[in-house]
Length: 132
View 1 (cartoon, rainbow, N blue to C red):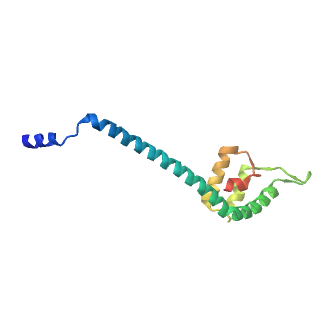
View 2: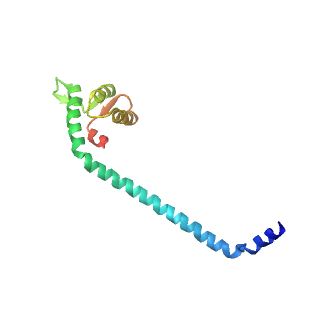
């Protein structure tokens, strides 16, 4: 055992020259991790733009159909105008009845509207933006 300990002592690196090398390695790792984080953020941004371009026609079609349903729900016969807002319950019913959106998409949109508007009136004018 004593022979092994003496042999290990011979292969040890003195700490004085190692400290600057260790610090340089740590700085390199931190710099690399920051660059990777920036790259991931950029990838997500590019991904959003790409998804917006890919689905813009489908979103427009869904928006056109559902806008008609929203407007029909809140049409005022006397003034011949649309309110621009719809009760949350009515929007929920319309979205649940449509075959254009998956149940998961409906839940996400309704959750977003519940946070944004509460459970009272929902502004449906920016529905296409919210679909993206």
